[in-house]
Image (cartoon, rainbow, N blue to C red; front, side):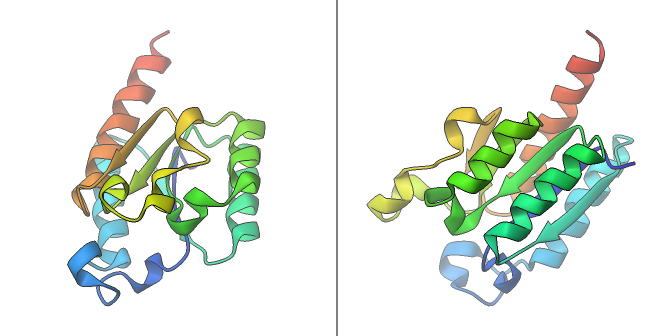
Amino acid sequence: MTDILLINGPNLNLLGKREPEIYGSTTLIEIEQSTKAHLAKAGLVSNCMQANGEHLIVDAIHTAWDQSVKFIIINPGAFTHTSVAIRDALLATKIPFIELHLSNVFARETFRHHSYLSDIAHGVICGFGPLGYQLAADAAITFLKTTSNK
């Protein structure tokens, strides 16, 4: 059983090669391995997925609901600014989630300042590079510990 699903959106498979001045030199595989290990130390099982297609992310959210995933950490990439479908999937499933971005989207182009997910997210982390994934994992751990005690 998966406790936490880590979803990475379009072009994140190119991390380590793509615009390292913005996204750094750490690869997605390294980020996923580190995040999974961090969550495992807290006794949580996690799975990771990356997709360049919006429907694959929607399908992953639906599957997460069917599998009783307790929390989602999502870096939706460019879909942050365009995807009502991903928003609707997250609303429909009611799985709590954190929206995550490697870069500070508010220090970038104006079109990146709007998110279709932020207002329904448990929280938003942006601008900390790969460390953001660990911060999101820590927040998810705390959330799950807090809600399981209620």
